[in-house]
Image 1 (cartoon, one colour):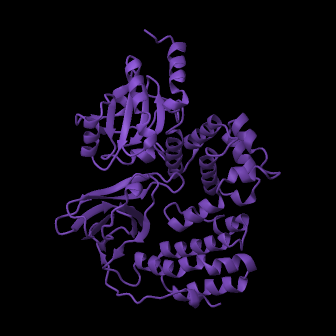
Image 2: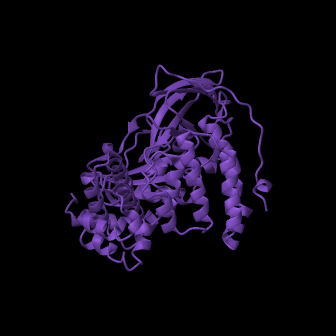
Image 3: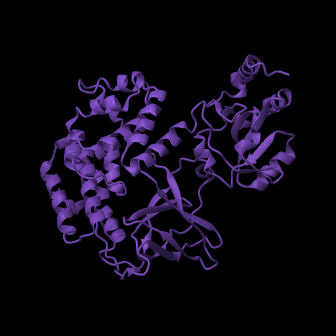
Length: 475
């Protein structure tokens, strides 16, 4: 089978991309957002591709003609930015000193279920750049992806089942011929690491071979999406798998018993593809991140090693990544403060976690259409009244609008605190809400006491009574 049988080439119009020599560190983006007149949109970027912490790049409002114009700061490297608009996860790449005329995907609203699912990823959609030419980065990546993505169908099956190295060579040659002469450094690396991902997904190369060919002794490309995608695939749960080898069996002891970065480093250096310090630290960061979600590793040991790396690394990027990993893994960890929020109550006042200090807080996430939520409201009302000197029941209410929450409360005699999630929908993801209801319990200092906490039907009151009584707090 020839590669051309699975690839469709589309004719595209080329336009000149405007260069902005007067502001080399800035990027100008203007264009159209059909259906979003008067609405506020946000572009984000990822601070790193291990913790996947996102940061807001720019927030802007679309005018009544569906048009907008914004300016953002950019470093020397191309920046990957994205926005969640309706059912679309819309993304693009921007390079410093350039101006882009774009069209954001037309408005298609999420369903009610999609809106209430914080893990709904959206349809990946490469934003259309109008003023492009044949060498513009978005154009190159779009054309490459049109050739690349069909390979994960029948060609991948054939590569995997038959170890068809002739087909692999023809694929590599086809890409080389199609993109010969395009000198954009980011795109060259993007293409290299995407083909590396194909090889490992087809099991044409082992993880160790890919590591030595693509990562050691190459410099770490923190901002290249394809590099980090392959990196995360190759080193996924690396500590767990390496611990099963003769060389790596000391990993659990290094972390759980000694809590030692130096001992862990020495153990990992027995893997000869990790001899370069920059790569070694990145693998340690990835390994520590993944180990928090694997049974057998001490969380205290992992945090101690992570803090040691953050305080001793000579790479600013690694200190930043370590901080993001720590924030992520301790976000819902018992004994730590949970994510803050600022949500509106029924009186129209904005409330945050700190407003409930001095009380135990039984935080729950509910909707007006969940039988599991509604069936426990009477018990919540009883708990709120019975333990009013000690406990605040707080419901984060998920519904279509603030007005619908008020209408629900007007029809029901519930007098504990209700907060509407709508002005900060990210609160669902912050608290890892995957079902309704979901409960957490915080102590009087605002730290998580139970994460997650049992529901009222799961004898929560017994636990609360024992906790308050054991601390001598009944009065």
